[in-house]
Length: 113
Length: 114
Image 1 (cartoon, each protein chain N blue to C red):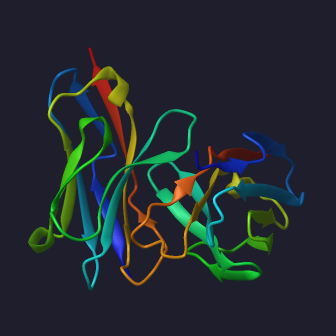
Image 2 (image 1 turned 90 degrees about the vertical axis):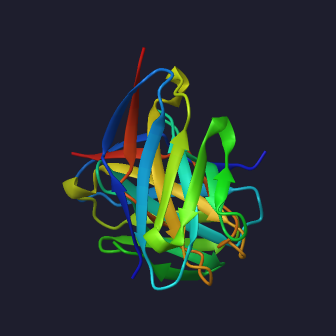
């Protein structure tokens, strides 16, 4: 069975600082990988995804993530945090032949002025 | 705009009640999902459906059932609500080629069982 681990349930960053959210997966075959964001009192929306091709993926709002097969990781970064980035972020995987998303535990980001 | 609509944002129910959570999507998607969201546990899959009248158990199906009589509608049923089912419930949908395409989520129903 595949699983997803997000290191750190809470992350605090200063406005303008680097945002780094870690995601590792365990899977017998490389899955498809997703990052979702959830703003307060809202559902999840897609930030970015990796399926095939270039391993560095760019998403919305200045976020990007790099798929590293050797490290089974898909860490999310943003060079400069903005107050509007305060939200909860979820890493998720799905098997290439499947359609069920498996989520990590989530990381809540707090941005300090 | 794609849309997944959950019938209620907030619900308060009594222990032992039968509870229905409704979800409607307007994207003609084949797959629909019910997740439960709890702090520190992320989203856990309860049930999913890949076609009308078809369903599969997810990771935590105990205490829940589902119904999909029409393609656009997927209902989650708590047969006899218990306090440990107090949670945020999220519905999602995706096309049948779902692996490469993201799922679209509703805004969630926060259920409190007292």
